[in-house]
Length: 276
Ligand SMILES: Cc1cc2nc3c(=O)[nH]c(=O)nc-3n(C[C@H](O)[C@H](O)[C@H](O)COP(=O)(O)OP(=O)(O)OC[C@H]3O[C@@H](n4cnc5c(N)ncnc54)[C@H](O)[C@@H]3O)c2cc1C
Image 1 (cartoon, rainbow, N blue to C red):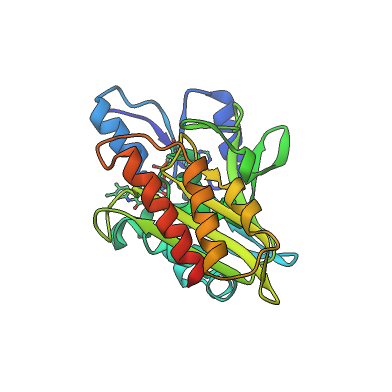
Image 2: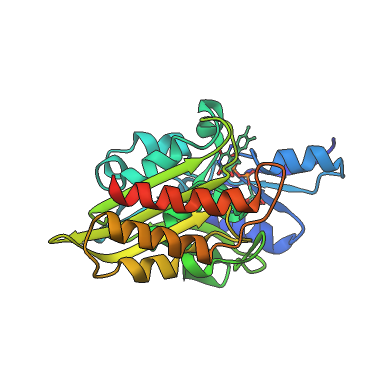
């Protein structure tokens, strides 16, 4: 494999390189991109290595929320005090992305832009009602995370744009994450669910449920959310929400699972999470 690679130190340099050569591919941990490149055997295009761009890395407070640089790895997320304190749902998801070696290289931005419906962080960012920040030479814009994945493996990133950060709003009181896979580590999910909400004196409020591997893109389970909103916390509500969740998913049969199993397990997982 012969290729050319640039390793800019600043975001400005990276964006300039991308605008000079729109064929060049931004890469971060390369854990997704390399597999695609190797298996297709095509000639490698010019690569734009983002890992040395200081501005794309790191985690800091953003108002009452958090700003997470695009090349922050899943290991960084698990170790960061701010994330551990306020967003345990993200820490949990980060700990289930592949094994330790993958977590050391794989970035949050790569997971988001790779846009697999099975990506572990995506339901979490949906449930947290995150935003993504993207930048081009024209400037920066923020996109609600719920609008970022537009179709199967498609995103709202425009030509010449890079994902620069994920912005989290203030942390919700109730946070829960479950991944169902064949094995605990290194397994792509069959179903992955994140729930964020408030428990207001025994009633559910501000409920957001993100689910992966149950449709062409990660989705919000809006019908289940509607069932929960304002309802009493407890078994009957959890069961009604589980039924609603099953009804609104559109899973497919594939190598890892059947659509029927995915729908069934989605309901089980939602119910169990609400009762935990
Ligand atoms: C053995 C193994 C196990 C895995 N297990 C899991 C798992 O359990 N759960 C899971 O969710 N994933 C898993 N993955 C997939 C992968 O590790 C993750 O999706 C990872 O987060 C990708 O991040 P990366 O930095 O390696 O992305 P890269 O491979 O570098 O990039 C992925 C894509 O995003 C683009 N991109 C990256 N960063 C940016 C940016 N800032 N701006 C614009 N475009 C960008 C690239 O051009 C490319 O198209 C696994 C992969 C392997 C090899």
